Length: 368
Ligand code: ZN
Ligand code: ZN
Image (cartoon, rainbow, N blue to C red; front, side, top):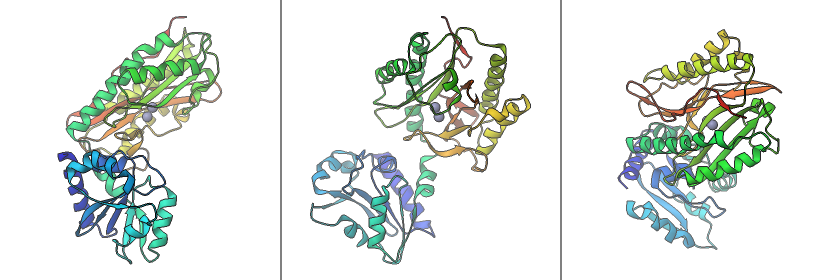
């Protein structure tokens, strides 16, 4: 409860200081859960945390969900809960508490339908995204959050430890994928978020999921998996496997990738920019002939969402601060042939990266 009270107080403070926004309307999603602990399911009925400069926040809830809201930490926080019944217009109710000519911001996950209906109630007001304001808080993890991410990291590591045993010539990606899903839950996750088993040419498609392709001898298999723990924090880790021996030219490229991933991890420290972490790996890969195959940013922030601020990408000049959590996941993808990726979640610490995924990063050669 103390965490939520201090997050709400920090956000209220940012809101008081903001020159561009006077109110916030936060619908169910990761921002609401981060701020209040209320893990409400986004549905067509409007639930929202409403915050206004100079006034106390309140939660608007459908009457039939009031008990659920009170059962969440919202009850213990003591937030004012206002309810609406089935025949009332909740958008009109929220709009009635906001300045007519003001400027309100909404969470980035609010359904467009809800934003449009709110805008229709406040035709004179400006509306914008609250992403910047809220991610300024969410980006920097507290020590509790770091421990949650560490637990998520070891849970997914324990799944990767078993993947080599599931990869067999003759099995399909989908068969391996469903075993992995089961293991993700057994390892302590509450939910499977994604399972990528990209074999052979599919390894060269970074966001391939699974297919009915049968795994063959000599295939490269990229396995990128993640889930959400019961407390809401996410895991995400990638290792690359080889079904038996692979070509020298692939192994050479993989060695470059492995070193690039290490260099980027070593570059993490407070005060360096997000884009420089990407550049460190990219420069090395380019100097060793595989830069053109590194077709995505090196990483993304992680917390209550698998992808959140800060994004580790050229152009992001945000400076790393102690407590920021993000992935370092360079890869190379030779279209139609094979690809590879190595991904760890790290925390920016005082003395450098605190690495949360610790399975060996070498190409895992599966005996066939
Ligand atoms: Zn991943
Ligand atoms: Zn990732």
